[in-house]
Amino acid sequence: MGRGPLATHHSSLLIPLVPMPLLTSKANPRFRALQARLRLSGPRREITLLLGGKLIEAWVEARQTPAGNRLHPSLWLRLEQTNPHPLETLLGVDTLVLGEALMRELADAGSPPEHALLMDLGPEPVGPLTSRAIGAWGIQDPGNLGAILRSAAAFGFQEALLGPGCADPFHPKTLRGSMGAAFLMPIRRVETLHLDSGHWYALDGGAGAMPMAEADLSEPLRLWVGNEGHGWQEVALPEGVRRLAISIQGVESLNAAVAAGIACYEVARRLTP
Picture (cartoon, helix red, strand yellow):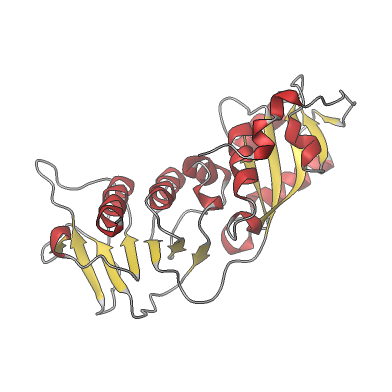
């Protein structure tokens, strides 16, 4: 991902070391309120955390896109005894310094990040689907969902659709796994598959699936990935959704995120002039 103008000049910016509020107790009412809001997930989620300077910079570079503009910075969180980040001043938000135990608990990681940015989350997009959309149905692991979003963005998909049972796309772990892809593609949830005039495919290596080599992958295209464990076995796919198989040898199946990456690459290969 390229470096934007804000990231390019970080080293030349001088930020005064102004004393900031420091929280070290997990019993602090402000910290507990923040935790409670971050625990909300799915449609109830109102805020999220960008963990680490690289992910924050990725959002800054994409913030003028429709997907990036869905997130709005509200509070900078800095690990105690860590130097300020240049974007603290440039983004114009307040800073709160956290003790190591508190930052580790918010990040839900072994090593606490030096910086995190609290973001307000705007409403989901509405309207017709874009010409190339990736779909995930029942993808439960945040890392898998993040990897699917990352592959789709890398190969020119313009939107992501999430069916029932999917991990929260704005959980900090999913955002970290997508490495900024959630800022490049609008993401919306769907409860059922309402087919439009596009080509609809569900990746499925079972009997009767169409080999990918024979599929018409032209746009408009809606490419779906099923659950990591049982795929589409418990889902009644509409008649217009074709099952699509990736040819493999020596193993029974592929990881859902790996299969999505291969399929997204094949789409880009065929559609790129």
